[in-house]
Image 1 (tube, rainbow, N blue to C red):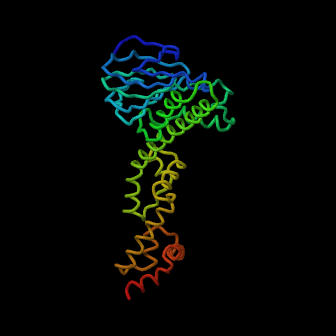
Image 2 (tube, helix red, strand yellow):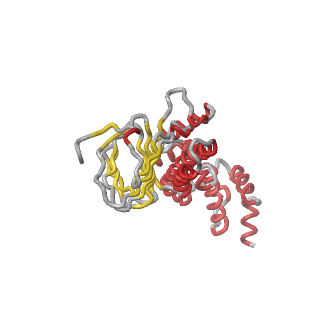
Image 3 (cartoon, rainbow, N blue to C red):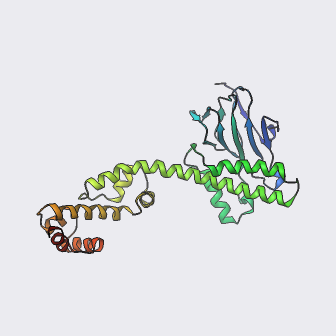
Length: 299
């Protein structure tokens, strides 16, 4: 890696056929001083490690096998991926191969108290916070992200300059792209978190008699209790306590069907506080009391 480092401002970039760079500030978008599309016909040298003061940089790889370096780590940047560099993160694209197609933009955060895209203060604050707190530096892109990047250039190149129509289309596309990026990051977070709770779901199904306190479950997943509850709802449709109750009722049905264990023993083994407590939940779930369920099965 080169030892040199650079502070690169938006003024550094020049619009060329192989690297389109648009300044959208005159279009009423001061938050996007540079929108780019690199399409290299031949390989280029790697870039110097650099940082963009006050600007988030978002890149979307459409074609090419690339390598990003950021914050001392190396990332394979492949087609369909999004890479995010926060304003204070030194980074560089280590490879610029022949045939590379990559969309990218700088997003400039407003001064304290300023509003993004003319939004109401509460909406601006939410968007500002979401863009500053991507859970992942590298994540999967979506068709929504790709199409928004493409529409930027289509509107810029086809609509007459200086018209209200072009400004509105570009502003609308900016909002669409930012929301699409946030959505793509959240999808990645949900999927990665879902992998974390899969072992918990299997354990709860295998041993429904255990207590499974919410705080203990959260610690196992390295999540907060509220985040774990949200993830359970997204994955199973139920909060943890309701999912565990369902596992216990399922096991109770098996025991009532194939064993002679008493209802009192079943309720005790499965962690219910009393046989009445067990019977209440069992009937709510199945429409039958445990005794009725056993008689029906054995008849």
